[in-house]
View 1 (cartoon, each protein chain N blue to C red):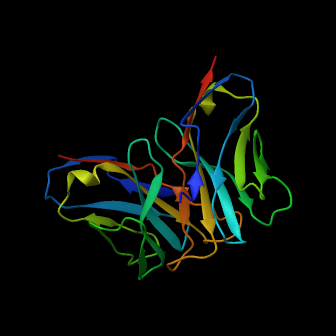
View 2: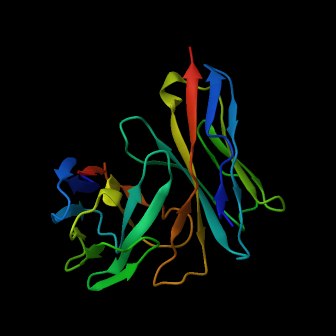
Length: 118
Length: 115
């Protein structure tokens, strides 16, 4: 089974509107972390936001917020007031406590390509 | 701080050739990682290291080797390049592998084509 599922290969949003990018995850680990990264067309990976499984409140970082629904195992990224520079690929990733090796590893989803329209 | 640097940015290899992708970080991070990203896909972990002298296999280690002789450097070696290794390679580092504030910082990537 996929550990991280991003069901929206592509999304469009009008400039200045809000958009939600979906992410669902699968784990039996009670302690885990969820990350969102942005990858613009230039290719670099930019960290956006982190949510710990025991965090009581949804994480927020500027225009980014994470809609964390633990029972549904979803961690959707909400971008408010979209800007043209938000056009990029967005990846959801999970880090579990249990690891088969010497460190806890990140598992990435397949990404969502967001296009902001002027 | 330069963060995580990678060289080269682009490389074309012939089948059977070998090469080393360089990665360095100046943040004194213990943890370092190598990923590959195939077109339209997410990142897959190749190898990682939790400190100098310690390396471990990730999800897709076949055809690659790594070493970690210093905290700063984590080179990735491709032996006998194959077309299936055509990909973009990212190096990353982090202070730790747990908790908030320990996200992975990524280098700019190396685009490798094997013909």
